[in-house]
Structures are given as structure tokens and as C-alpha cells.
Image 1 (cartoon, rainbow over the protein chains, first blue to last red):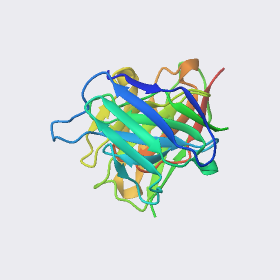
Image 2: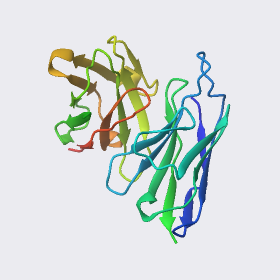
Image 3: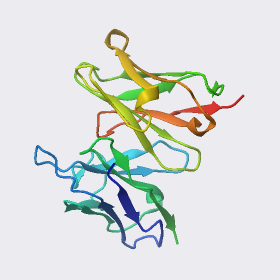
Image 4: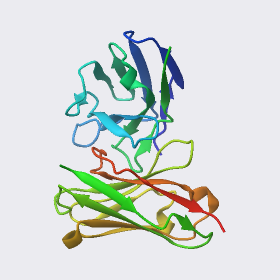
Length: 112
Length: 114
């Protein structure tokens, strides 16, 4: 199985400051179609996860452009340019290239 | 508006079979896939499997021998069945649209206990 290694495990950020989360995969996530199936999700406390970004860098509808995704092959990053109170929760990366699909262990974003 | 809603028994005895239903609205199962994901209390997410728009399935190899996903397109429902449940199967079970998990249901908590 593809192992998704997320860092840091937790992150304490002040409102208005940037945040960055890394996700590294144990093998390339480039599929046979040439697409890279790497998604980012946010699970707010007591809620279901919500997808923020798909195909490495494409923002889902309604997701503010404070969020951005980048990376290639095995190395990916989620960045928040200016953290807001609504951003707290646990962020997960998910690879959908190789079966079984696998998640990172999560990064908990807390407000400083 | 796309919606997914999971339903199930809540409590299952060890060694028994779990049956869950995901009822969808705002999307057609003949043109959308549906995935199942679970999350043990206080832990991370585990992808369980997917039923594709053509009715084909793919499962997580770790639980493949115990898992079955099927659907009734006329009722807009997707079903999960997993046998030989143990306490470690206690989790919140979610269904989600597509293989990239674009929309999620609210989840249903399943507790395995005698």
C-alpha cells in the first residue's frame, strides 16, 4: 500500500498568519492517465471531512483562494496564506492513484 | 444539491454482519461512483472500497475478504455489508461521492459490542 506521510502532526497558527502542511507518498502518484490523484480534505470538529483540493491544486467550489495546493510525484504541500478561525480542524491528504486509496494520518491545525 | 445519508443499526454484536445503507440524492448512481470510508473514534480515516458507475467494485485488500458493496440504482441506494465484525471495527462509517470523495454524508456510528 502507498504510505502517505503528513507533517507536522499539529500546527499552532495565529489568525492572519500562513500555514503549510506537507504530504509525502511512498511512491509516485502519477497515474497511467498522466493525472496525479492527490486530494486535501478538512475535518472540522464534530463534522464529516470536506474536500478542499483535488488533482493536487484544483480548488473545490466555494473554497477560498487562501488555500492552495502544489507538488508532484511524491511530494505535496497545502498552504493557507492567511489562517482564519474557520480553518481549524484536522487536514488529511488522500491519494487516489493506487489501490487501496490511502490517507495521511492528519495534521491538526489549532489557533494560537 | 448533492446529498448522501448513511443509515444502519448502531450496535452490532461481535462475529455478526454489519449492513449499512447510503441513500443519495442529487446524483445518479449510473453516472457516479460512491465510496465507503470509516474512522475509529479519535483516529484517522480508512478507505474501504468503491462501487463504480458501471457497478464494478474495488475493495481495500485489508478487509476485502469480509466486505461487499452493492447498489440499487432505482432506489438511489448503495449498500455495505461486512461480516465477522470485531471490536476494532467500531467506527464512524461514511459514504462519499466519487473516488475522490467530493461530497460526504454525515456518517453513522457503528459500535461492535456484546
